[in-house]
Image (cartoon, rainbow, N blue to C red; front, side, top):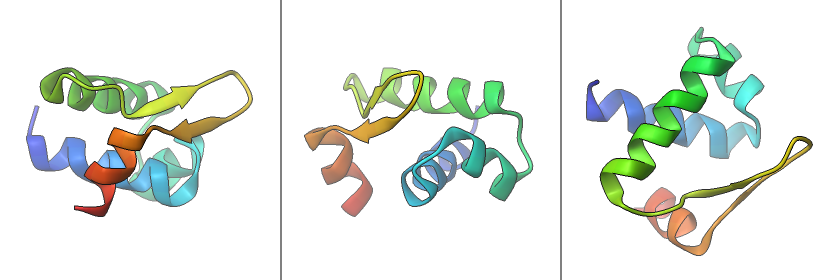
Length: 68
């Protein structure tokens, strides 16, 4: 997977505060959005988001990465 694509997906998730919203914005399935965010977190060795069935929240590390 292209790292830039993973980063764009992560940014879309944070901007829309939603995996569904990011998927719509990027014309990707929710499953692919989730896979991309998980892959980026794995490559960075850090948890970027707190995820529940109803909401997502950004971690401190995730916020710092987003702002950079």
